[in-house]
Amino acid sequence: MQEMRTDIPVNEVARIIMAMNRQEIETLVMLLTEEGNELLERKRDIESGKVKLLFGEEVFDV
Image (cartoon, rainbow, N blue to C red; front, side):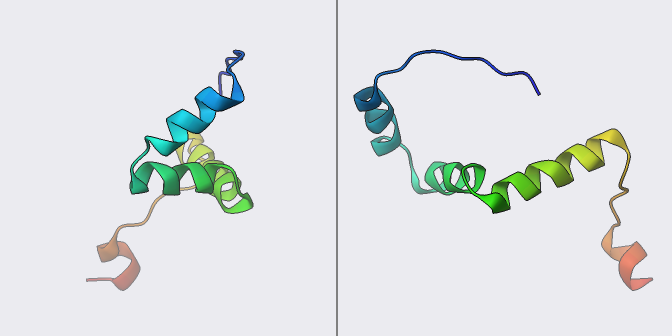
């Protein structure tokens, strides 16, 4: 994953967070927690082909 660094004043970060809607805040919380790290790891596994997604028909043999 590519990274970019920039200096942003803390009050600007606070302003950005205050302007976020509920869904954006929930996404931010997930990215800042262990749960978010696990989800990113799962996404990488799927994208790399290490893990194959199963569809409902495959899981329930319907």
